[in-house]
Structure formats: C-alpha cells, structure tokens
Image (cartoon, rainbow, N blue to C red; front, side, top):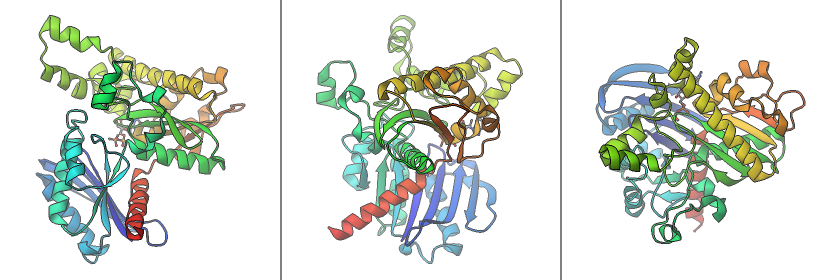
Length: 397
Ligand code: ADP
C-alpha cells in the first residue's frame, strides 16, 4: 500500500512516500521552500540515496506538485495511479475533526475557518485542489490536527465567555499539533515500556504547544480555538491580554488588519527580539549581548516552564516530559531553562546528556522521579497510519 503524505505550509510543501504494505518503509521524501517565488529551494531524497538539492522557480503549488510527481516517477512509483491515497496533515475545519475524505463538504468546512487559521487553511485548500486536479482518481484523505484532543473534558475546552458562544458558534478550545503529540505519546510509552503514564508532551517548532496526556489521552493542551494562543510562536503572539487589541484599536486607531498582521506575523520570537523568527538567530543574538533577544529567549523558556508546572498540577503529578519539534529536539538551552528549578516536583535534567542529545534519547537526571526525553517527532507516519486505517475501514464497510 503506497501512501503519499503531504504537509503544506504557507510557502512550503513537504512530502513523504510510504510503503505500508507489510512494514513501514519510506520510499522517498522531499521538501520545497519559498513556494510562490522564482527562488524556490527543493530537496528530494529516495531511500538509500543522497538527497538532491536545487534552487529553481516554484511559482505555485501546481508547479511544486508537478516537480514532486516527476521525481517520484523516476524511481519510486510506476505511475501516479499506483498511489492508494494522498494524505494531508490538515489543521482546522468548522464542525469537522478526525480522519476525513477531503470532499467538497470538508473543504467548505475548512474554508469556513479561514479566519481562524489564516496561515494554514487557505494554502491547504489551494494545494488540495491542485492535487485533486492532478490526481482525479486518487482519494485525498485529511487527518485533522484537532483529532487527538477530542478526549479533553469540558473543564479544559470551555472558555469563560457566555456559554452561547460555545452553543451557537462552537467557540471552544480545540488544540492542534495532534499528530506530533500522538507520536510523542506512543514513542514515550515505547521508551518507558508502559502506557499508564502522566506525560507532558512539548511540541516546540516554529509553532509550539504543550499537551497533558493521561494514559495516552489528551487531557488538556495550550493551543485553543485558534493557533494564536499558548506559548509564543516564531512570529505569532501566544497568550496575551485580550484587552491589548481593544485598547490599541479604540485609543490609537489601529485597524483590524493591522492588529491581525501584528499578532499573526510580527509577534512571538520575532516581535520580542526584533532579530528573527528563528530561535537559532535569537539565541546567537542573546549570546552577543542583545537584551531584547535575551528577554525573548528567557520569556519563551519561562512560558514553557509555567505550562509544565500547570499541567503537572492538572494531572496530579508527572511521569514523563518529552520534547519534540525543531526546537524541542535541537535546543539544549530551551530544554535546560524550561526545566530549571523543577527539582521540587521531582523533575531533574541530566545537564551533560542534554548538551549532546541526539533524539530519540533519555535525559533524565540523577534522582528524578519524572523521566525526560528528546524525541524526533514523525507526524507523517501518524498521518499515513491513520489514512491506511481509514482506507481499510472503507473497504470493510
Ligand atoms: P515547523 O513548526 O515549521 O514545522 P520545525 O518543527 O522544523 O518547524 O521547527 C523549526 C524551528 O526549530 C525553527 O524556528 C528553528 O529556530 C528551530 N531549530 C532548529 N534547529 C535548532 C537548533 N539547533 N537550536 C535552536 N533552534 C532550532
């Protein structure tokens, strides 16, 4: 069974072709960046071969999809018809979650939430439509990032606003990064040899969220109705006082569009540091004495630390803390500062192991009651497994 998993960003297209017939084999994978420009970057790798990297114009998704198809047909696919499905890690839709066939009704539900997920839904819908045109006979399956959090209880997902907003407009916490939190949960359980754990899963990438997981199920998570809350992100604000926009608009004449751009594109690590939305640049600037960059790094780690403490309280303890995502896997500094001073609650990091961590690995310090891991997340395999299960259930039905 051949499943192509695609992950669409506002300017990127990542893909991985799996053969799930008997095992879980990756046949090809690739990543295109700066889609929509004449200066696109593309890296494609077939199993057992070196990656081929090139810069070339990728003016739109249609071009990106054509390039990807041509590359897959060279070695790993006899024809595009031999694909069993294309599976997408989709973000958000009105009234829809879990695993879905991406038909018109689901695409409309995604379009209905374009205001809620402005950086994700419009490019995803555009890319899915391009795929549908390119591969009209291949099922397109979406695994929604909100799906893993369907187990949250009302006390975790209801907001303290008039209940009519929930009842009439379904305004509630949904949570995101479900594929990564699910992978981290499964992998942490494997590494610990048990599933009955209270886990704090920290997915820290360009966009980040933490999830309190009890016995494999999401109890709470800090992304919400949208992806604009929780800890700060690379250029999104995370939790702020809701009266800041109201004050700026009423007393300083900010427009709605200005506020939206500011919170969505000019805040977070980029906005606080004034340096970059890439934590590596911000860490470097902090090391060389840039005070705003230092405050951004300190604040980022402090927000993660507070969330860890709060989830330990919510779960009545913590057995494991796992870090994943570009930052969680790679930044020793963030892991160290986020866990600093948590010995009082039985969390102690092995500082030396942390500095040289190569995920997947354990970073638990001497005497720590909670075990600590860095995990290389694999959202694509979670999506591929779900698509396979979905196709199997359709065949049986
Ligand atoms: P996305 O959320 O866009 O899928 P990733 O999970 O790949 O992205 O995470 C991207 C982030 O990871 C970037 O902001 C980058 O700063 C960060 N990152 C990657 N490597 C390192 C590193 N060695 N040290 C600190 N941050 C890193």
